[in-house]
Image (tube, rainbow, N blue to C red; front, side, top):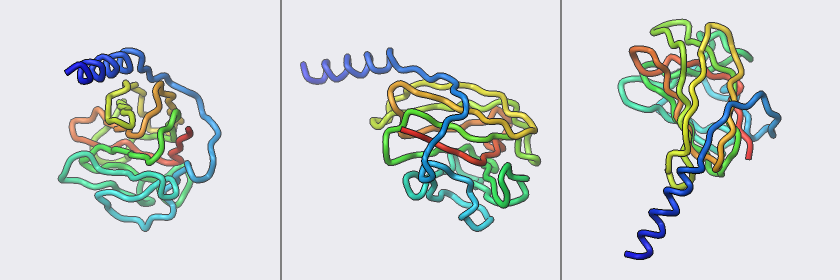
Length: 172
């Protein structure tokens, strides 16, 4: 019982000290950059990203992670967006930074903002940030304390998804 109380209070302390801040464009190594160009255009439930250091998953069912040129990517030939699903990115290392180029998907439902929810290695919620999503590609970046291993990107449209991604990157 005593051990459980210590763990409970430790978790509460971590959560109380957790923060997520916006952060400008940051440098990173090639294995932590994802342009979605190595994937064949199509619809996916999930796929590896960051040179195999992570995975992009759909949140929900009834839709897919769409990869391909119809998005008018920031760096051709491909970009990615969730069609009727939001997006989760999991990585196999604890990281401090996350960011990329984001845009409204040009079809479906109009997204005007996205919520980025960050979780640590124990799947404990660190915090979240909200950023505007526009018809123009915009860099959106975050820094977290403590480090994250999972981020959910959730659009505010009446249906899940429709946030476009390109040049996604992360850094320890």
